[in-house]
Image (cartoon, rainbow, N blue to C red; front, side, top):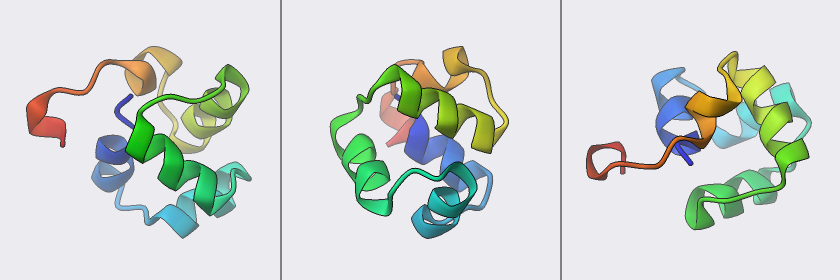
Length: 65
């Protein structure tokens, strides 16, 4: 999942993304660490980041880390 890379590209901190998406900070931190999440959470994050689920859920590459 490319959450961290997209979040940083959009200039958002974890707390800012949490406020936009209504996803708890700890959940976002866990997703960025593990790289997976529930579909319902991914939808909330994709909507807040204004990206598609395909973009958000694409596999990380080394340069994204």
